[in-house]
Length: 378
Image (cartoon, rainbow, N blue to C red; front, side, top):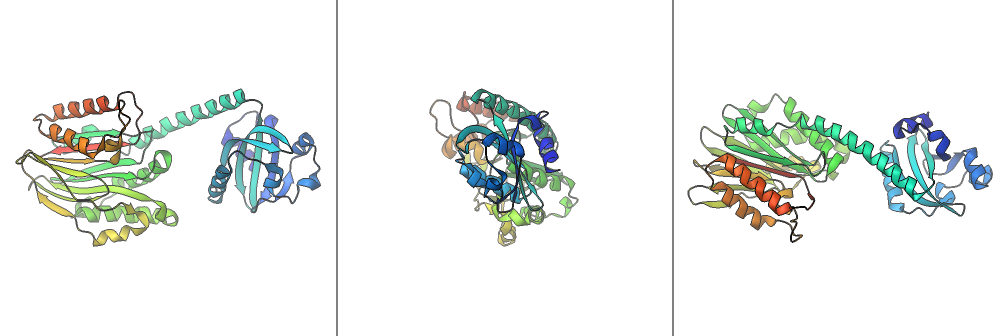
């Protein structure tokens, strides 16, 4: 059964023909079964392998740290695999290892890679499959996020949204909901990139989409603590490892008032009367395990004026490296750009201006982090 599970996981039609060895070990990695093919190929007797530690037989891995990471994943019940240059009984080979947990230990399968060229072809094939899966996952993930057109509607045509994950799925996320002329808005960043951060974002977004409590929330701390408590219940075992930077805000269109709390993310208000960009104070990032400390925090309430802008963005915007100087944009340049953007009368011009600035700064350089930017004109 363990072998069938591995075949399904790797999706190799000819796996059995390429398997160089098959080991079973106990939880301490002491071998209790080894395939005849391995014994025959490497000229050793069964008695020389049974009872030995796996690393006494398979020596000189090119990455011991990756093996340690395997064991962490295995303890969580996951299958793990990787390519290694190893020495077995004095012979050096490239090998693809796959390891799977079983009830009382682990199963190790090794597939011999005959040459560097075959290794690269195998990696290319795997990368292609992963890329395909990630594109599908990104489509599903996008269903959880409200669109830029939705944002335009809830801001009555006076809002701008830019969302560019570094990979298909990212740690950045956002959410908004308009209830009785009050706009609930959250922008967040689970620390990390790709799948691990995307899973957390997906669960958080799903909870917000499904919630029936929006009308009962009276301040941004209530909103944030409610959903963090739910996430903590799901990930209690790992909640001390989950760090979050986030802004939670409520904008009251009827009274032109904002109620905001921020944790390690910048929030700026452009004052249309003084033509100044003003910073709204931010707290340190949240550790999920300590979510209850939110209840002792105070949000900031301030009056807005016609023509004021509110800007919220993740750290990816200011940390993006430029093409010409290989330096991050930085908060100073970011504030200069937002000040100039806020002085424009037409929101559509503001959008084009910001997109142009982003393109000019990045040039041909690669994106270095997820980027989320929101602006609302009062």
